[in-house]
Length: 145
Image (cartoon, rainbow, N blue to C red; front, side):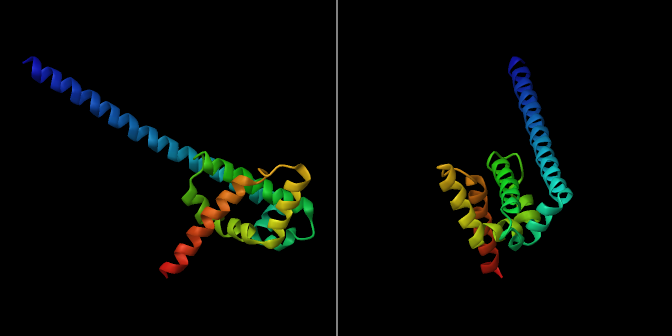
């Protein structure tokens, strides 16, 4: 009789823990989506940032627009690296713009200038890491087609 009671308690605790873990994972996923949409709204509300996201070439002759774009993508990259924003959602909604910025020669040169002037090679490292990840994913998608 004690064995059945002990087994019942163990099963009850295990089921409670499973329910907790599933609820916790669901809550975290919702929070990641909410944080992402806050970033997306901020980008849409800032006309210069939105234009730069749509066409990275507008940042060629305007260092302020370039820095605004890089700062935005750096924050997104930081949050993705901390798993506070969902990578797949970021890729689906912002991926093309991030990859275009990551691959743009003038943006790479701009990052180098900033890093050299500040004597700090960590500037925009989260943007670069995110750009690499999304660029690889884009290449994999092209090869699947």
